[in-house]
Image (cartoon, rainbow, N blue to C red):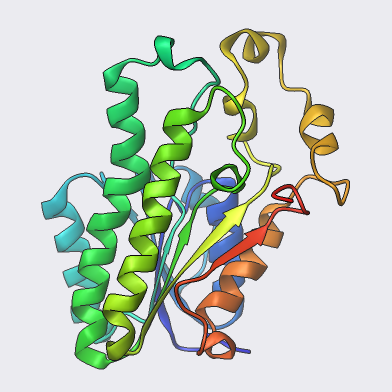
Length: 248
C-alpha cells in the first residue's frame, strides 16, 4: 500500500494523533497539509512535503481559502483526515452550559462539515478522493457525563455515512475511525473536573480496554492510512474501531 504523491489535508495536525498520522503519510510519500489553530505542535515535524497552516476551522472563508490555495498548488486533493476535536470534562447534563454544548458541536461536527464541503468540491473535479473523520468509541459505548461530546461525535458519524452515499458516484469514499482510550494529552480531559485536579490515572483507562493497553497514536495512524489507501477502494460509509475492544 502506498499514498505516494497523494495530497492529503490533516486537521488537528499538531496533536498527538495528528502528528502520528502526518508522519505516517509523509513516510508513504504523500504531500501533507497540516491545519491547526497554532503551528506550534506541527513545528516538531520538519519535512519538505509538510505544509503548516494556522486556521480557525469554524471560519468558513479561511477554510475555503486554504483548500483553494493547495488545490491550485497541486491540482488535486486526494484525501482529508479530520482529527481536530475537543473533549468534554465529565459532568451531568444539568451542569453543561449552552456555550459548552455549542462549542463541542461546533468544533467536533460543524468544523467537519466545512472541511468536507470544500474537499468534496475539489475531489469531484478529479472523480477521486478519500475522507476519514475521527470519532470516538463512546458513540458505540457511552458512559455517563459525556452526553454532549458523544452527541457531537454521533452527529459527525451520521453526517459521514450520509456523505458517503451522496459522493459514491463521484468515486469519493467517506469513512469514520473511532479510537478508544488513547495515549494523548486529551485523555485526561474526559475525567470529571475533580478527577482532573487529582491528576490522570492512566491505569483506570487502561483497564477499560480488553486488549490491555491504551491505544497509541501510531495505531490510529495505521487505521487512517488503510482507509485512505487504494487497498480500501471498496470501503465507504463504514466505521472502523481502533479501540482494543473497548466498544464490545
